[in-house]
Length: 235
Image (cartoon, rainbow, N blue to C red):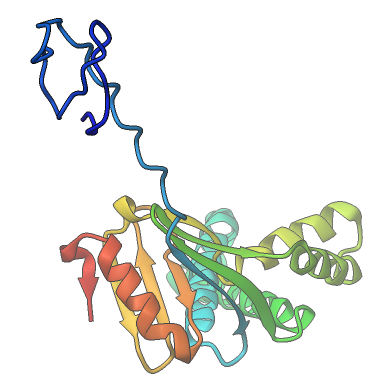
């Protein structure tokens, strides 16, 4: 759009506005250059840090119990089946198989729970996590110090480097989940107002839980509601 005060390139007559031809000499006027696009503003978002408790956290315990159940059942099947095939006939058949499967499952499950408690102790019963909400998704990260402390603790339990690495990897899996989730991938949002936790569920992945300080919870909930689909939000 032209501004008043521009002049015709042919006769220097003053132009009044958006005319295509000069009103004095009739010369065709060049088109005005397009207005520049406005520069994008700062990226909207929220960010905070939170020390996630371990031994008193129902979500962490839930993760340990599921790990114990899966590990116990899997190890019972893998180790118990060949033993049952070889020794069940001479040791009571079905009763022997039930006892063997149960014993392996219980020992393996207790080992998984113990590994979870070990994880809590080596991080001093808390994991400081940085949470970020931005226009495309949510992000949760921990410092490298957490991984280093778990590895050091595992080195005292493992008899070799390989064993220590395996213990460390398993222990890190039992810590609160970190990572990134895009809003478009969120299938359900669960709000725990009493504990100030927002759970973002996505298909085929562990849910990402946002632990929010009490004073920031309402703002974080509003931000999530504004960015996920309406059907994803549940109370």
